[in-house]
Each structure stands twice: as C-alpha cells, then as structure tokens.
Image 1 (cartoon, rainbow, N blue to C red):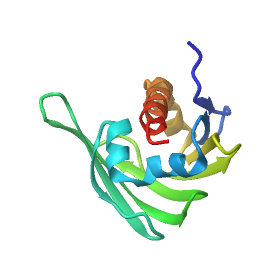
Image 2: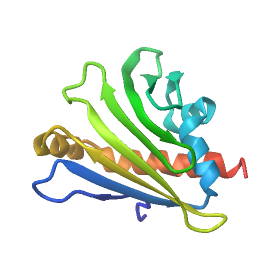
Image 3: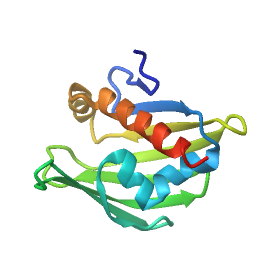
Amino acid sequence: MEQKTKIHAENGKQELIITREFDLPLELLFTAYTEAEIVEQWMGTKVLKLENKNHGSYQFQTSDPKGNIAFIANGVIHEFIPNQKITRTFEMDNAPFDAQLEFLQFEKLTDGTSKLTMHIIYKSGEIRDKVLQLPFALGINMAHNKLQNIVSKLK
C-alpha cells in the first residue's frame, strides 16, 4: 500500500519536508491540529495543555496499554495563524534528541481537499538521520490516515 504521507530528506541536510493531501476542507484539517479532543483521538495521546496562540505552549502525554507513561512531548507555539500556519518547537522528555523546530503550513486545494506541509529542522543532520532510522515514516503515515478517518466523520 502506498504511503500517502510523503517525506523528503535530502542527503547532508538537517531538515525534513513532510507533505500530505487530505480529503478534508482546510478548516477541518486545521481543527485536527488545534482541538484537544480531536488531537487525542488521531495521535493516541493525552493532551495536557494546548494553547493555540502566539507564544502559547502545549504538552502531550503518551502511555502504554498498562497506563505507564511512555513519554511526554511539549513545545512552544511561536506563530499561530488560523487555517494557515503553526510554527512551534517539539521536544520529548528523556529522549536522546534535542528540540526541533516545526513549520506547519495548511493549504486549501479545493473546497473539499487540503494539504499539510511540515518543514522540520533538527539541530544536526545526524539527529535527523537517527529519527529516520526509527519507524518514523510509517508512524506519521498511520497517524495521518487516522486523522483522515476521524475528521472526515465531522464533515
């Protein structure tokens, strides 16, 4: 099965460009990233904080099936423009990776379709390459598939 979420990783760079087209209106795609209840469903995580504003912050907690905390992710939202852009940092507690900078761009394609472009910058190319060695591509594609399925029911 073809992965709908595309990841472009140029050799020697410390960045990734991730793109995905959704069969969702722009407003619903943006809502999937900004409404805590919806984020929890498609990401499979608990939203502890989600301040959708310039200089806001967020914190997500992911637990294993037994309820043990697997990790906590958090960051600062530097820029928030509804239905257009979210610029934020992303950091996982107790992870061997430094914080990363994420530029999320939301684009209307048609009345019923939209596109997400994520430009992620890591501290180094080495860190980016370590992330790519994880099942990162499979995981983000699965999460985006889940987002599509859950949010399409809100149409």
